[in-house]
Length: 418
Image (cartoon, rainbow, N blue to C red; front, side, top):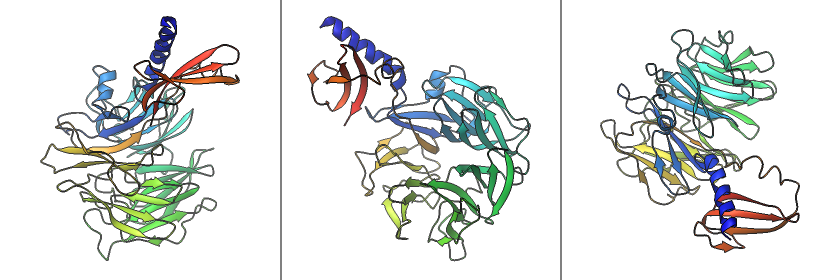
């Protein structure tokens, strides 16, 4: 028995390195501009705890850049896009290991003074990076970035991006959408949407843009409020869908403004008004718009549109703040009915302005445990809790799952169970 629990402990330790930043949410925030660099924090679903400033924790003496507003991930890396570098310690475009958050590379600027906005991991050898100087291409394999942007993409600064039918579609601030051929990396055309085109998002195989020329406050009758579908064959705008409020416009100060998407039900959730106290819901099947689907607790408001839907849980993760002069910030989790799950979490004092949330990828097990057993026949499965108790059924919370195979071998992995 002692030998077995030694094996169990070894298996648990082997998976811990993979589980440190899994089963949770990355919380990216601007931090205190002029005083601190931006920071990324991690909220764990397993214990409800928040680790603050995890990038600095994993990279002593290094920071993110200033006003980091966007992050994206692929199988190997997480990419951070900042509006400015932070002295010599943090760049405008930082690449870290997706499992450990260890810094791999940092780029201080683009074309001497270009700020980054957003990026799109396209393949193992290609990440598109949107900057105020145009659209660049980073190669994660070689660590190289193109010396000049894609021709024509510097006319209007690139924002959020989606991929469709061999093309990369890029929101072009106050203009429309750039259509990039991903084989030649050339600007093929620009879909004109006029002033106020603010974001792009993809839902199933559909690509949509939001058009909102109301930069601040509640839209008036003179404001353009539309969702516009993009035909993914002709790459032309279809007939716009007029709505009472679309997604926020980021033309004043660029932020991620795309909505939270329930793709299965074709439903959008978003904060249409900067510093508003509500989250709206738009059902794209029925056209029903519910302005105050979620009313933020009294005294709190939304800074930008820090609201996204976790594809694993189906819940909305939302960050709020009290006022520009306040140090009080909160994390909320709501279900699809708009009901808060558990209690709101007050973030640490001086957390400062949230930028976006990003959901950690599912936990991976070390190569050599699952791969070696992929073709084997399972004889039995046992579940052990942290106290060492065993059961044929999972325990709630942390489990060590021990699988016995018909050839006499066994494997163990750590999993969270609801």
